[in-house]
Length: 389
Image (cartoon, rainbow, N blue to C red; front, side):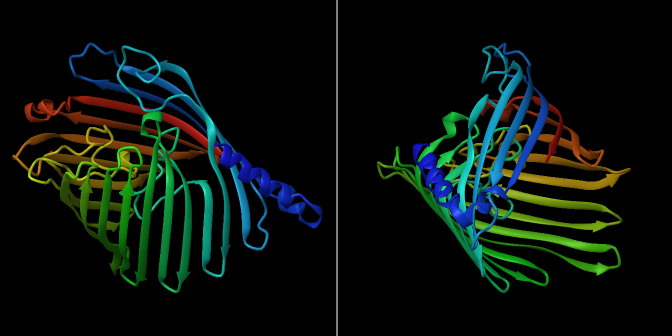
């Protein structure tokens, strides 16, 4: 934190001198505010009461005017629990991952000119669909990174490299001192985007390494007026080694196909997070995990037996309200375990053009096999409103 304050103080001091005063004075002040109610009920026979939280989240930031490609951004965030009947704040309740927070959420210097870009400091990093690297933007306190990010774009090719020194998680126990290298290169075509990536992670405290190398292709093709087909394929290999030399390897695979027509999108997919003979399950430690494998968050950590998620989704707009629904069927990769099923639904709309309101629900149904892995019947529900200005 001291390094971030020093970095900003130096940059602001230089920028405020003489002819550079407008670098600061003509910048943009903004605020991102949300108020959200969340309920979580886990049927785990531990006598914990249903969690209820009313969370106010306010992020206020200032970004300077661009000067020779450079900008400075500082963003402070306050997360306040107006109702705190949940485990992170009050004992005896089920958990909701929104602790009270007061922190510098982002503090960075950026550069962008002639296809080159760079960001130094506490920043947001989202790669592809955030399956491997994301900001967990759904939670009140998003995940950020103390990092250096370099980018280059020429024609249809985009390359990005990030060196991460610290992960700032959505809750304090997820904070980590790391030495992570992220490389992502993509090429855009008329029918989709092809991406190759290498994410080389090391935890400085445990000295555990986690290397993931993979490729992805995603796109859509118009087949007639108002009708397009959608497709995504992805494959990755992950190699993990602990400080005492224990090694594991597992594979990841995603296949999804669908169609959009008359404002409706339908798709069928299968995501497999593989297993190393039941000893280790493929992990995505820097991901926006809530967006995958169901919103009840039962599989934020992949079981050692691996996870096979077969899902169907539908999305569209009804009378100005965006609606999406998912059904997931979960099984293990090893040992043929039935890990339950889940139904998700979300609806969002704009009010008075400035406010976004929404409702969302997740209902996970457990089985005997899933309960052996401590995955129990879970129901979660959200209502929220937010605005940016």
